[in-house]
Length: 304
Image (tube, rainbow, N blue to C red; front, top):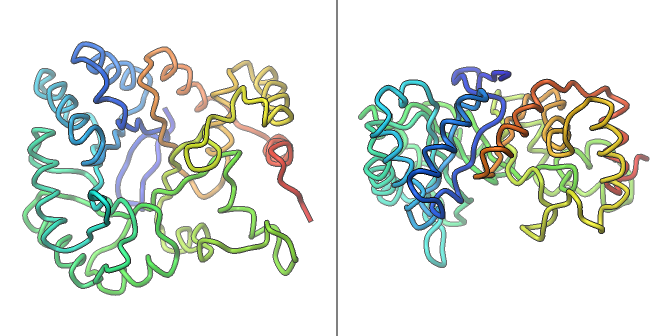
């Protein structure tokens, strides 16, 4: 598996396994999923305290407990801050959430902890204090955010003695907002609208690794674009590229993200061992510049 160094400090696989759906598995199935991921070079596991109401972390914790030495072979990440009907980035909540995450996973530290969603009432100094407290206690090595724009990142970083190394953002062939505006500068079109404060460029300038969530989705969980009639032209082009490289359509969807020079880590959420192994073959694909743009255009995106 290709490796990345997130934020230039945290080594991990270029593809990460998102564990949101692990709560639906029994122990045997969960254990198999984790082992298949590792066998295929995926050593980065992404959690959140809300996944399955904490059950995803609990079953993953059982896998770790029953496989001595596994913790030292993986990179473990979780997220906090989404509550029932509101977001909470207060010092108290972050500290309490982190302790709950560690308890459910049965570990003494996380490699990275992310704020799951921007909190409109966030006080940067409070977040910085919570992060510093967790770091000094040895409970969290590195910190990041999820779904934050460039201005929010700058505001938080100004208060922090350390660094933000990760920003988790939705990105796929059918969700290309991060790259659209940069190719439509000074043009009157919907694709020219900057909706994220040029977050892609900001992250590259500040050595913040982007993690792409929902790499097979379009819209806000509206559906999967692979095999979807709504994206017939895109799927036809994906099939051509997949056949040229001798891999599946799914692998091409991930390879398209991996082709971007920002060094984006792709988070995949499948709990199907065969599909995980299939996705991992994306590491063997190096799309040409022409292939990348053909897929971008086939998704319905214009070039000026």
